[in-house]
Image (tube, rainbow, N blue to C red; front, side, top):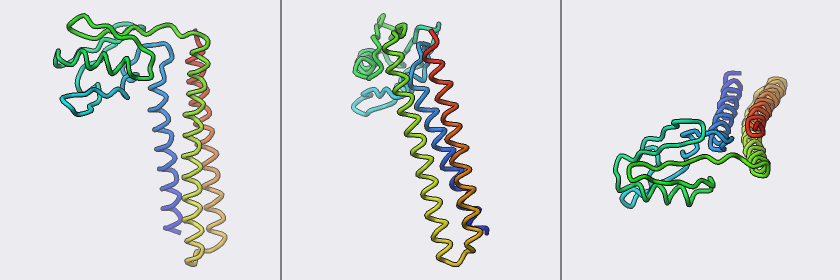
Length: 186
């Protein structure tokens, strides 16, 4: 029984990680408001080594439509600008010699639809991770049954895993719904 509980705990942990990862990915999808998290995926060439932007500069949001990036070294201004332009964020940075300023454009209806598709894709990836956790756990439970665990205990555990899967899939749907509303709100 103790081994069965370990598998169930592992399944919950893997599903928690899938939800956390989904949340992280959805933060990168901008909903028309400026957020320093939008730039988390940007890597800067820092003396020949790719380094996350937030480790080379401070990123602030003076208002809902502007990001201010103040590099710790002035020499990085061009690199930061280049990295933002080359990213898939569709942003147009400008620099004033001291910092990089990024104005977040209003989202068009077409762009909102694209972002909703991106959100749904991320949600599907989250659900796939949850289903993979279920499969991995069930495979482990089947192995326990081969090793002598009671068939009834295994069946109950598989039912618990399915309930967990349903619970986490529902959480994914709720997160996606909230993010879609955020994107579609003008």
